[in-house]
Amino acid sequence: MSNEVTGLKRIATLCILRNKDRFLLLRRFKEPNKDMYVPVGGKIDPFENPDDAVVREVMEETGIPITSKQFCGILTETSPIKYNWISYVYVSDIEFVDAPYCNEGDLEWISAAQLQSISTPVTDLYIYDYVAKGEFFAFNAVYDSDLNLTGLWEQFSNTKIK
Image (cartoon, rainbow, N blue to C red; front, side, top):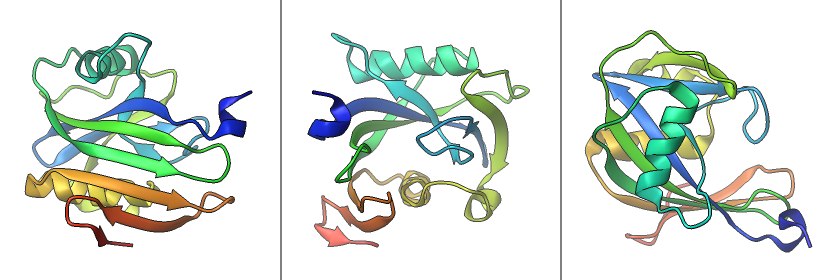
């Protein structure tokens, strides 16, 4: 039985690569989130912990060795179809480098002021906001069968935020 049929969660890491007020984001070539700007990351391998996975994923997608990272929170996403994820979210402050090549999409530096005007998942805007405030989060996002966000809750405060 496939993951799409059973609704099993895939477990991943996301890393917000930050240099002052800019973020190195990936405009994805493929689903999920095709043509949207997202932090780099990917699935956690068997027997791998999230801390090691985020370092590996950043290196694989950008070639940038992150030497420091901070865990920020967890994003759980649930849909009645194929989109079911648990993502460990980190931030890493890095030196400015020219946006490297990535086979997953185009990496681009995006300023904090641009975040509201680019194509990005709605959940990510809340993540950037919490990261900017230095607040931990545990988001629970629910989607319909067309992958439209129908609800977003912050679990620590048990507050519906969208």
